[in-house]
Length: 409
Image 1 (cartoon, helix red, strand yellow):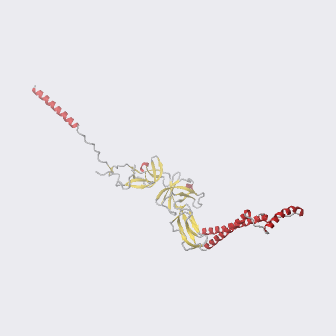
Image 2 (cartoon, rainbow, N blue to C red; image 1 turned 180 degrees about the vertical axis):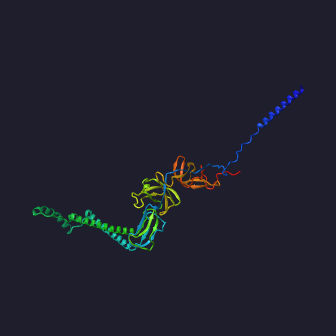
Image 3 (tube, one colour; image 1 turned 90 degrees about the horizontal axis):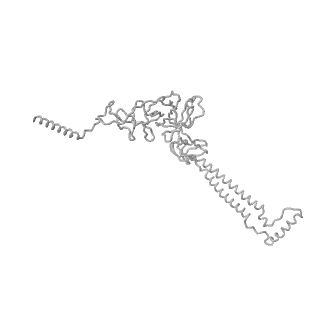
């Protein structure tokens, strides 16, 4: 009986000890779950940033056509008069401001004529002012005393009315005037007015001489009509030129066009204002069609098309350029094009870029020329090739040389 009680008591103690052990172990903090090491894929750790592969997508078929850059407006300044060059504003590439003198000819022979003309102008102005004074005096000035004095003046005033009254009975004739009346009569005033108008006409003639000399002096100055750049210089200081001889060519460097000869069957699909992707001076930009010639070349069967380049393009007249012209119905060089998700395209300034992942896990920034957008993908006309891998969601601070992979463990 006693042994049975001891066994029960021992079992009870064991149960209590086990419960206390369970309570003690349950109150301790459990160890955190540690993420397993990054899995290895193709020899690299799984990238911290998602990576997508550049695929292909149907693109509007385009033909690659070459052309050249030309200035939209070129001003040819030529000599209007013979003479010797005394001033040239600069060399090719120098900028000239609007309304500034670009080329000047000597004017030594014209200076004496100019001074003489102004001296004649001053003399004529004095004569005109004198004639104006005489006319005013004839109309409103004080009259001169009559010949014979006051006695003869009284005699005229008494006899003149009587004579004019008797004129009808004596056969008629012009009425008699006193000397006072004659001074303000129509003939005297008319003579004064004629003298004034004659001097006014002479003043206009003299002004015409000065205007003619001013025109001659202006013709000896070649002036820039707007802010421009010298693209061709034909003369130097000291050269003797004749009328019609070229002096300099000017153009606006911010107004450039890409001139392309396009087959007629392609040109008929273009419209004024349509944007074309072009490449010029290692820059990919969009140019707007500004002019389509109305006739085709009878030999080549091509139509001349001009596309306006945006301001700031690092191009110059004469440079080679390429335009991708759409070809409805396919058959062109770019029937398919590399494509990436829209999220893989970032912008640095105004340039679209993508970040290509190389074999070492480093990224390389590529500037893109984009094509059509279809759904969530964008065609890439240049900058990427199908099969390359790019960052799917590039961060705003991502740059070339950064690694998208975590450290090896």
